[in-house]
Amino acid sequence: MKVGLFFGSFNPIHQGHLIIAQAVLNQTEVDQIWFVVSPQNPHKKSKSLLHEFDRLDLVDRAIADNYSFKSSDIEFNLPRPSYTIDTLVHLAERHPETEFKLIIGGDNLEQFKSWKNYNQLLDYYGLYVYPRGEEPVSDLWAHKNVQRIEAPILHISATYIRACIQQGQSIKYLVPDEVEALISSKKFYL
Image (cartoon, rainbow, N blue to C red; front, side, top):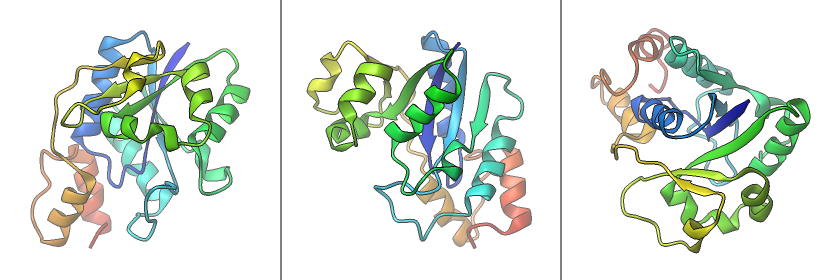
């Protein structure tokens, strides 16, 4: 089985994440996309993060109707901060029959060489890279294990969604209905 790993804070998950995941599914040979909810990104501050189990619940609600999408809490029990290479090694040990590929935004490709063991990530796993605006300048585009994904460029961000919530504005159409309902009922991000 081939699995695309979409790591993220998903704080909250939104339509942009789902559209990118579907584009990867449509354009590659992956059988499934796993949304790996990161408890703490080494490159982001953690104080604005909703609790990891709440974010996992939001992901589960967002993808419930797509059998090709799965959520993963694999990083919840790994040392923090979590590094992608450590998670992948752990996943490969648990699922030796599965071929994993990373899904990242083009903006992350520019700084990819700063990631822990980035060469190992490229050589053993490979990348699916989706655009997030201007084409990043990177020699990594030429790497045999880097594939560009054509996906719509949507300027939807979790930061924008959280700001809308805090300002009492609707987030309808920015997130799936089930996600909007849970955020509203639990008063997340207020």
